[in-house]
Structures are given as structure tokens and as C-alpha cells.
Image (cartoon, helix red, strand yellow):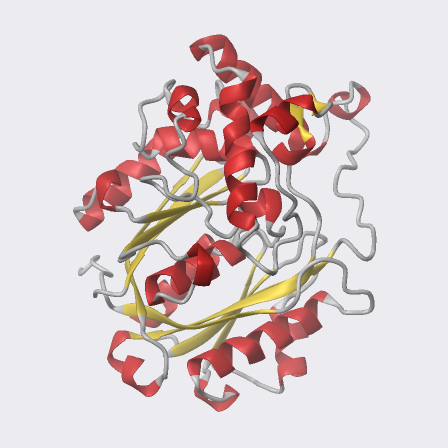
Length: 375
């Protein structure tokens, strides 16, 4: 069986709605508007689609049987992922296309959690909630405390993640947080959940995002430069909290090993890196486990400015989920595609040819995709 998917599938369209607070706009409507924008970007109509993959919103809506009718389509192939973070949705699309289930698929995510004041930080009747251990910030804080205890990472070193993403966000007109922030200003802020401060944690957002994905032999039928999927990986730890040191998420190193072996590439080949980050701790962990910096040395490395504009490893050039918007990482791939096309404006990374996107489903699974304009 041929397991090499290199260059067999390409992203040929990207689109998104406005971000922020969009009263009266349902997740399904946001998805449809994003798909329309992605189709326009690709230069085709909805009749080109024979597949639809939706990702449930943070509040559990936005399923395929809700989006499809609004879009006016009845595709041959339709699926919904409970937790897509775009990587997992993209991987499903690649599998569907390479097995002949569909030729051209619209992928989408939509949410309205901000305008409906969705209680994202709420917890059930359990001991964790009773002790105040709730929201993703609680877990991120525990992860950072562990990293500090093991490796001596300082708050100032860690703060460079949020400061770097804010610098990139200032160049991004759709970013929700664009106010300048120095490391001194960051350190002056109070804790949200010690040792995390407000800029270390994502926000809730309304909006939609979409990708159009197709077979490599069909890319000439679309107007944009194709961005090919060179490789992908996934690794689960579905025992979750029952796994030893589950917050360290060492299983991410297995996902890294897979993708480097499958593509024949390594960290030094990546021109722009995108990391899904509900908290800044996700960035620190994945930089280390994917081999961009040795485990335990991420703090000093971040303080040297490698990820900032002008650095040698641009990370989350859209501003990430800390400053741009909370679309479960979907806007990260949109940004990666635009960077590889040379369409990122003031954020453009010089000579960007290969981009990588890493994501997780909290501590249950992780995955990565490598993209390039070269098949």
C-alpha cells in the first residue's frame, strides 16, 4: 500500500469572515460566508465541490447537516469532526481525496461563542472545579509550573511568546489585539492564573474560516498558486488524565518523529511555523517536542528573539490565538497558505517555501502538517 501522500493534495482556496463579536451570526452562517470567500479566492463556484467537512464550534454546533443546506449543496461526501483544530480536518480531507471519496472538499469552522457569552471556563460538579482548577488556563498554568520546576524557565523568558505574537498581530488587520506590548508591560500585568497573565491565554471569538482542498492533478482548474500537503502526522494519548505526567504531553515527540521521517525534512527546513495555542504554553511545548529547540531550553531561546519579526524562525505570523482570534487554529493554516503564496503583506516572510502547522486536542492527541508550494 502506498502511504506517501506527498504532493497528492493541495489547498487552492482560503477564506474567512470578520473576527470578533458578530451578533446574530450563527456558526453555520459564518461557515457559509467563509466558504463563499474561499471559493472566490479559488476562482470557482460551489458546483466544483463534491465534499464538505465541518468542525464543530466550541459550543458544539456547526455540523455538516446544518452547513450544507445553508450553502445549498448536497455533496457526495460530508463529515463533521467533533474537535478539528484544522489539522485533523485537513488530515481527514487528505484521506478522503486520496481514497477517491471526493475530489474537491470545502473545510470549515464557525463559532459565535463571543457574542452569546458562551461559558467556556465553566466546569462540572467535580473536585477540580471545586478547587478552582478550571478553564484551559488552569492546565496551562500547571504545565508552565512544571516546566519552571524542571528547567528553570523564567516568567520573562516565557513572556516573549505573547510579546512576539503581539508584534506580528500589529501587522494583521483582522487581529483582535493589536496594541503594542513590550516585555516590561507584559511583566507588569497581574496574573490571570499564576504564572499565566492575560496575554498568555486566548480569547473567545465569533467568525468563520474555510479551506478548499483538491486533488493535485486538478490544481490548474483554480486561479491561485496551489499549496501542497507534503506530509502529516498524528499521535494519540486518549487515556488523557490517566497517563503519567499527562500535562507534559511527551507523546508530541512521537508525532514529530512521524512527520520528519515521512517527509525527509527536519526543523531547519521550516521557513514559517504555526502552533495552535489556547495558551502560550502550547508554543513552548511544541517548539521543544518537534525539535526546534532541545527540551528544557525553550525559555532562553525564546528570549533571544528567534520567533519575532526578523527572527530566524517566524512563529504564528498572524498573531496566533493569543492576539489574532480564537478559531481553533484554523486561521493559522490560512496564514501559512498566504505566506507560501507570497500574499501576507507586511507580515511576509522572505522566500517562504515550506510551512508547518502543529496542533493538539488538549492532552488527548496531537498532529502536524507540512505545506509547500512545491509538490
